Structures are given as C-alpha cells and as structure tokens.
Image (cartoon, rainbow, N blue to C red; front, side, top):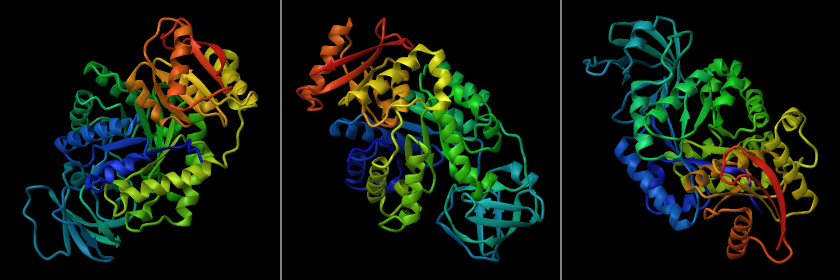
Length: 474
C-alpha cells in the first residue's frame, strides 16, 4: 500500500536512545526541531545525526526549526510537578527566594505577567490541560489555586485568559534561533503565533539578511490569523494547523471546523499544509493509539492535509518509534480511501487555471496521467513550485519531483504524494528526459511499456516558467 501523506516527527530525547532515530527515519518524511526546548548544542548534534542517517537510508528528509515565538512559558523545573485539584502554589520570578508552605512552586521568567495578573484571573497551562486561578499577586510572586490539575513539566505554555499584552512577533530568543538555523542550514522555519502577512515578511527579511534562503511555514494558532489567512498564505511557503493553541485561544469545540477551513484555504492557494497537535497523544504512555486518534488522523488526511505531525509522542513519549509506525499505518490506510478528483477541475481552482499558464499545464499533466494510466508524473522544478502545484492537482498517480538542487529536493519531502528525485544538471530537454529515464530504470521505478508524464519549464531551470508537458514511453 503506497502512502502519500507525509509524516513529520518532532525530535527529542526519546528518539536519541539506541537505534530509535534510525528506525523512526525509515518511516518519517520530515523532522521538526522545537526551539522551545533543548539547547543549541544538543540541537546541532541531533541535526548532524539526522542528516547522516538520511544519507545512510537513502532518503531526502527535510528538517525545519519551529521558532518559539511570543509565547509565555513556565521556567525550568528540577522535576515535573503534580498539580492536585484545589492545591495552592506559587509562581516566582527567577532569583526570588521561594517561600515555604505551598504545595508546589514554579519559576515564571516573564515580568509582564506579574504586572498584568489580577486576582480572580484564570490561566490555562499546557494547551489547556491545566487551569489555575490567581489568588493574590505581588511584584515577583503570584499565589494561585489549581482548578483543574495534572502533571506539569518544564517550559509548558501559559495562556492567561483575558490578558492581552501586545508582543513583538519575534522575540530575542527567536532572533538567536533564526541565526542558529541559518548557520546550520535547516531546510525551513516554522513561525509561531503569526497574526498577519507582515509577521512572515519580517521573518523572511531577517533570514535573507543573514544570508539564508529558507522558506517559512506559518503556524495558524492565533485568532487574528484566521481573518488574515489569505494574505498569510500569499507570503508563506505553507501553513500548519497548530491545534493546541488554536483550541486554547478559540475553544476545543471549534478546532475541527477551523481545521477544515484552514486546509481548504491552503489547498485553494496551492500551498502545503501540516496538521499538528495530539494526533496520537495517548501513545505518549501507551503502545497503541486509540480508535478516536486513528479516526482523527484519517479525517485530517481526507480533509486534504499534506502532512500529519507528532509532537510529544515522538519527542518525549515512551513509544516514539511505535508512534511513527502507527501513524504511517493509519495514513496509508486513509490514503487508500482518498477520493480521486483529477479528472475534474476543483471549482475553487478554475479561475486560477484560466489565468495562469503554469497551473494550466500542471493540471493538464495530472489529467493526462490519469487518462493514460501513467506510472509517474515527473515535475521538473528549480525551486519546488511546479512540484507543489502538481502535488495539489494529482490524483492517484504518484509524483516525482525532479530537481538538481538537494535542498529543494529535501523540501519536497513535505509535499503530499511527491518523491524527490535528484538529477544532474543538463543543457536541453533531450538530456533531461534521458537522465530521468536512466534513473527510473536504475531505481526500478519504471519498466518496459510504462508511460511517464513530464512537466517542465522552458527555458530550463528558470523558476516559475512551467509551460511544457511531455509523455514518455519506456
């Protein structure tokens, strides 16, 4: 069973034990580095190991750095806390003496929260899993009561209900992490708490100033982003449905509908979309997912997502490899039941097809591939744009994203149904066709009488010029 949906796993200590990372990378298609956790040194070591294992396994695996963004988090705990319902504890500013007599205490490295907190206010922690009530406040101490308790680990997020403090889209920590990401040549950045297109443009300008070319995945998790979704999609490489903070900000009950809305908008814009947060949450502790989680993953795929992502399941869970393997099994089964629609043009793309030659040619290639039962669609691409279009428009025919650039090849690892193919730089279309023919035969990806539909731009290797389709018979 061929799986088209891509799998993203978050790297963390659970995967850095023994051969776990190697085993997980046999199924995972992309790796997320979470800048909210860990330190630059361990992150660099992990990146080197991922790159090395990807070469060993013969896979093009993109690595993206997920910036923390303007999010409040508790500080570092010596050990996890167990917050019991009704218990009273304190938040304290780092460096402040911790008074005795409380059930628990946690550092809070955000002076603005001590200033903005008010008695009676409710705070949500860890994506809403824990609810606290502010009892009293001081300059550097907050006394709180646990309304809904649970386990609390270091660096978990805080959402103070009703407290609206305007924050810069990129923090001082983000700037340091951006510099690190450019220097270590991550493949993409994910930007947290995007509100408007200018937030993405600001990050892109900083990346370019540092000499980087990394594109940006905009995480849709703030209410303001929903009203500006069109303009955000225009300036982003892709988007992520960040369901954790989306649920905290707007209510858990609204998440399913918002997920469908965001995925539909991304598909209309011909942009990749990742669906994330609690996909297989129970596997943090258990060796198998629940039936509800399997249904959740499948429905995200049937909504049209390009990729599904594991967070704590792979980063800190008890069964990280099994979580990746189960996600692959569920995705493959869901893909087998995806309705194919290439033979008819999606209504929301009709206007774009009429207006743009590149989209028209991409659609024609996909439809032709369906009609002649082609083995592959080969999308020749310089920067990945053609592959993104074909990925969105293709039906049951698998896609090869052919490029001379290894970085572009890795980024295509996030596109639904696209297998990266690195080819030598050639000077004309005849050489291009022969290069692909040779690679497909050598890789046992095509045989006698197979037909392949190719789409490309002339002149060769110029981004944004897709204007040609060719059918090749082996």
